Image 1 (cartoon, rainbow, N blue to C red):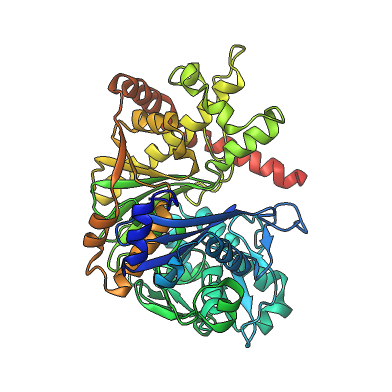
Image 2: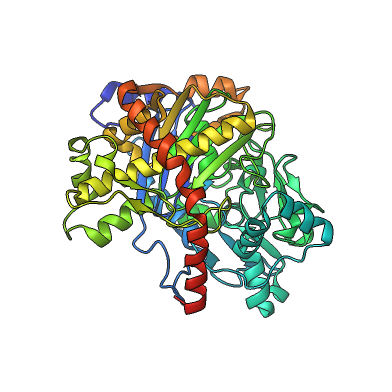
Length: 526
């Protein structure tokens, strides 16, 4: 429930109640949100800030950086904005703070925990020029499963390897290599501690045991010394207390406990109530993902880990399209009229036939680790296709790719998905939700709020406060289905025909061409 000053009875009850509240921050790529949540999963107050500059002007094409204190400053700014609309003094009933944060965005800190350079964001496309140093045994293992190119790509994608190779003077001064979640915790509390569920990225982390790796194949990707990594605690535990500096800058009461949650995607899956093996979470955001929840560890693709769930002892197996609904933003920016918006295009989605009249688009604007050569494809284009056809084909392509991932993950895990829970900016359009349901042939469910990440983060805090004794109890009390989209099975049959006969074969059949494209690009320095 969004707080409404005109609801006098509700306002009075809230003032008189001693019901505990939790302050959650959801730090995204494009914006930050602050939410005050009660134990029933109702949002009592909220505020948000859309970043004017999500990244600073890059020093080189493809780089994506941000100032070290940018997100901490936005937390404080967003908290002050929230407090300004708190006319009923609800801020003083907040019992804990929690933060959900974007992943694989890194900082290096000196011995005083001061940043040595800007944050390198997950969007950054820089690559290390060196290759992993593999022994004969390791080379044989990776070669036998066709993963040599993928391991090389993962190594080159590691910002640690790039810093070590390109900024050796800064690396020599580095005391800690951290994700921005760790640094935000430090700024809020003065303690450099992080959650196990935040360790998602190119770091030597044992995703099965939720501890740092001392040795193993994953250290081929990023061999960061253990002493340069932060101390970890489990979700639901107290990281520290809000310090005086933060309180003065933000208005958040000093001394409130900061409770560990996890990454934005992990919080989102929990906030969608995806806690059993028959459900999957779909996020149609900047990066689009499908996640399973399981209590048995498996690799969604060879040598690619399942990530730690917010729930200790559970895992979130995930497939990610790196440039998911970012592709939509790119399309509108580059190919639509200056005053045209995504909302304008959404109005015409249902005017275009399912299957976009034979137009198929694959969403590989940035390759994934499973196929480092993958490129986007547009096939079936003819003279009657319009920009509305292209728009729908992009949305269908993202869903085809997520469906493709679901079928592979079901095979590897033994799970059978029976229903989908959906979130992310793309899910705000009901026509897109219906397309998703039709392509998957499964019910698609939306919860009571689009702030699933904030709700998932709040659940960790209520567990930490002892309000709920288990994550099952918390999700039952805090999450409610608000709308269900049922698949049109006749339309699903058409989509299955397109998937089985065309889409499922595109990447494999075109990989030799992708390799030739990559070679031409490298040879001509495009």
